[in-house]
Length: 461
Image 1 (tube, rainbow, N blue to C red):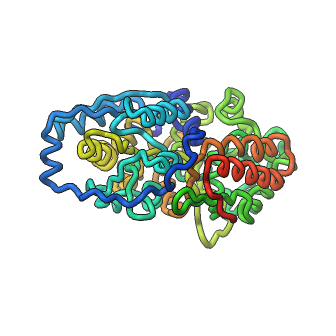
Image 2 (image 1 turned 90 degrees about the horizontal axis):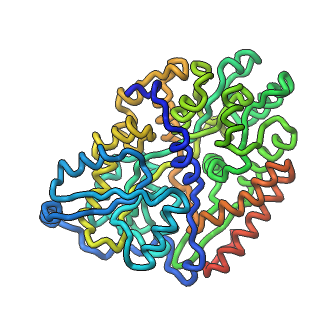
Image 3 (image 1 turned 60 degrees about the horizontal axis):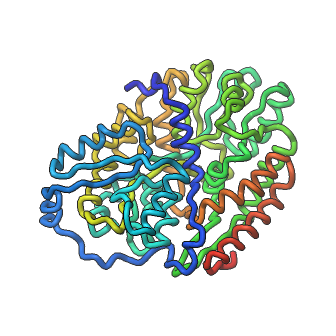
């Protein structure tokens, strides 16, 4: 498929990539007194080739919960290789609905799937309750070099556990209107200082145009920017121990920067993925979109009237000598620990995302940005020259950006609360053009209070 000509279902894409990308995973009182976030190293004996051969020849039905549309072709590839195994696909919803149903079924001890779609940021929410199967005894460790390094870090535990298999990613970059830049003599900003100067210059020259929009409802993007800046807002260690540090010096630098631009009125702060936001992109109200690797395909379908005017570039840098980026979005396949078919489920999760043909289908059919190194360097993918982006090889650019994403960023085991509290503190400060640095302190206090009430031991920053 010519990716440049692919027009995604924007309603479907927005739910898949943007509602769930915020990591809306609810946990509630079930956390009280629970086990450690990393779980414990698996004591299960590694299965042998004979064990796998026997299991994969035994008639078995697996249930797979996924929101991925039109996944039948990938499933068919697996069933062709393992004809004794049948996979029942269930769409249990997206975002909160998906995770709430999954958690309820796990707690009830019945109705849970064998394998479930799970975003990177959701994994700690389920490892903290010991709900995921460690895939390391099932051969998953051999796949480490197949996947982008930072994704493997996201699915791995501190004692060598492997909690899921990466499927797609969202390294962050910047899409920009080349025509607007050319008109106003603006070069793609190399640093965030350059970006701020360009924002002021552009809005002064044309008050109806802003360099970008930092959505006040988008905690996921904020986390990606924290990731790029080198912040470490969360960490877990031991049984029930969590570190919350969302108002450290790096985070406050970020808040002062974006809060300052918002107060100056030189960037937009309207909610994203609304009719007004789509209209703004089509009409040239915003000259850039700070987005992720799934953004180019999404934009080509939702801003068709601007075809040929956009280009892609890496994010501006805090330190130009040390290129870095963050991630926004992407998901994995995780095996639920309670499965009665652990070998078949583990093999399925691995095949689905590492088999070259299956991985490529996710790219060409669902337009997911790959997590496998071989596909990212495949000429048919990396060499695609998108007409929407003036013939630029956008896939190749984002693949290169992905190599600069840190492997050290961690998520909390209560991301839904982090998102809610961010929206009501930091997000609100951006929308109202108030003190965003002070809002970080409020976010820190609220999240710390919540964690303690849920039974966590909160370590001082």
